Image (tube, rainbow, N blue to C red):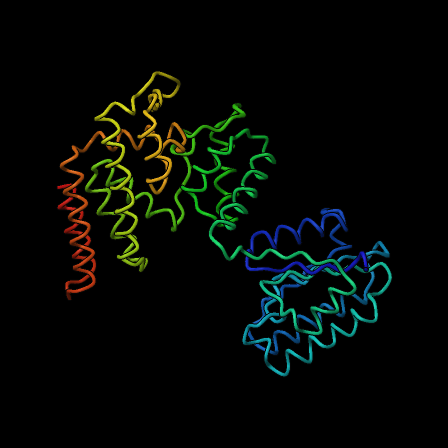
Length: 363
């Protein structure tokens, strides 16, 4: 295996670019600009492919100005995967030239880093890189649970990098708000680092105060606005989501889950299974000692045991439940069922159905 050839690829563009940049800095000091060359390879046609590959081959055959060693980064490659441009004869010919050089061995003292949004693992280029170089793949997990675990591990690494202390539950709350995109995760953690200042521990209140919801998490914000009985904000978020072409059925599903959650907590409050106790940041919600029957129901018959919620998040949800009576929550549930049916069986526009739904629930 050659120590001077690296292929970094995958759909997670941020992590691909970050890893490639890290490798470049290990090969050549960042301030030694004479011994490093970056070639943009985001090619849209076969002529641009030929130009990028030609520049790469020329760079690899030219020593550094004041050094015998040099690192070349072919960055953002679009023509070694399954994109349309990779299928053109001109692109195939150009990539074949680079593959031939890799098989023959890079010139002494030369290093090549290739970063790409994807790589065809059946291609001669990929096989040559695998045989003679080091591969790093950053592909998103196909299963939702695995994607969440990967994002949690990545977020924990970024918190540690900035010397911020967080518990597992805080990381979960953070991801619920910002989503799973790597670039957004890093950006929001850097914002948190500035926000907390000299403190080294991130609290749930910090996350609520400073982080920005991702597009995927705005649906969560809509449910929060409904839980807080904030009709103007709920309508504003709804219009934003519909403008972004978020499916109305998906939004209803999220609201159904929230109302079901609030109904359970409202019942727990009514029966004093759930109370508030004093503590930092305004206190927290706490569960009383429950009978074996109630314990079994919460553990086995409920979709998600509410006792597993983070205490701070549980307090926020309990406060939302406290804004409704049991009868009002049941009215909300019925309104959701009727809106669901209306979306499926009537010709009323989805935006009208959804706005009327929110007005019925919160007006």
